[in-house]
Image (tube, rainbow, N blue to C red; front, side, top):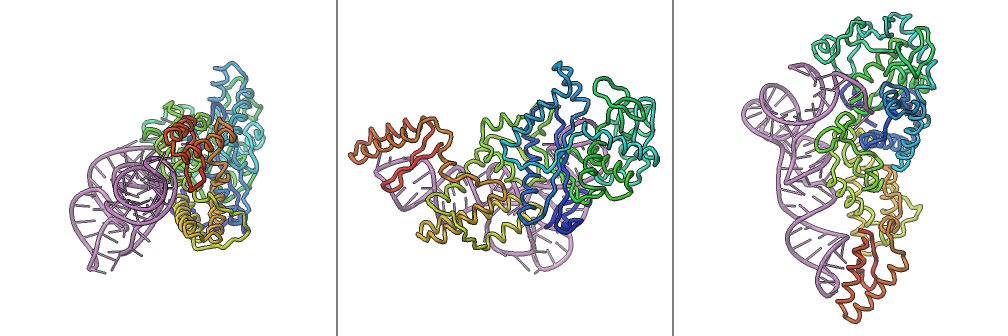
Length: 456
RNA sequence: GGCUGAGUGGCAGAGUGGUUAUGCAGCGGAUUGCAAAUCCGUCAACGCCGGUUCAAUUCCGACCUCAGCCUCCA
């Protein structure tokens, strides 16, 4: 298994710290708004990664946090005139609905910042004791200069950052790159601390929650690529300064989702929520669309792309039709090997998917030659490989017929009338029936004497 | 301006020092009352300029272009 590690900038052979156990932490949501498809892209990527690691018998401990204390949460709750906890509760429920609708597996634990304030305070105390943090007038800061390796993840030097003119000058800080560990001057959401009432700064909660759940050093830490800097860089600094040990072995970052060739983000207000996306596409189509590019590449969200994804997925399901593949017979073929080779090369899902289509071609040929035993076995293998990716979970009949307004009986009746008309060579009537069904989103396929239908 | 990454056929998207990616669309064929759908076959590509090499889309260097990050972001 090879995984691209942001720290080293290359693919590395993956070796867990403890035999086949994988301890993995993924930065989750800050909950103050609806989830959008950029989130779907990131969390479905990690969903795929966890699914795959488990499928090859790794014991994965998958932790994904919730950040439920933050400036924006407070601002939004004031805007809506509700308490922050009400806001975060609503957002968390809504997030769970969305993620479930997308068919994501649940993390093994979903710790929340507000439930880990003690750990956070304890980390900050240690940092101050060790001279890596200092208490200023308004806040407690981490001293970036005190960590020699600061910048090792995002590959930037402290000096370079000073020349970047976008760091605001704050006289309270010793170094402009220093960041807040504990915000003292606050109203509303606050906890007692040795430095007075206040709340944690951004990055510290992830250090606390990840180390609480997985230990001081763990295998994989992941998140969207926009978290590389400053969030993950700061997490490394805090954590390694506290423990003196390496924090996470492998850092994984997902590419950003773009829309109209522009990054989708809150500040640009060009985001599409998961709920909106699911109005237009099924969750399986959405998943297929997202995994048909590599998790590290940027991906442009578009109607055309979604349409292509649907057509491609239809092709997979089509190959399964008219087969009875509920068989225990598993003949690991050359395809399985190719599929796993692709996935073990840094989770190359597009390449793995191409293997699925090679199988489709083979299945279709076998069907044509009436070699059904062989076709069934291959179809069964196609399904189990696809299932690893979280696709091809339905049976093809359901897939092609669900979500239609007309009842099955009505449709069958119309088909019968049409076929009778065809027999009597009354093509005017038969075409009329066909067009009426088409208006209901139903496509007819004449297969010999039988006619089957699909939704369009 | 700094850092990181990327530029592949009409589109999407993998990969490789010499041999078909794959999907969508197109084209040809099979099938059909005709369509549709389906199946089969098929065309087509590696940003630009140098270098290394018997051979480069693949390695090296320059250039151009694009994206992400440098500010909250998944």
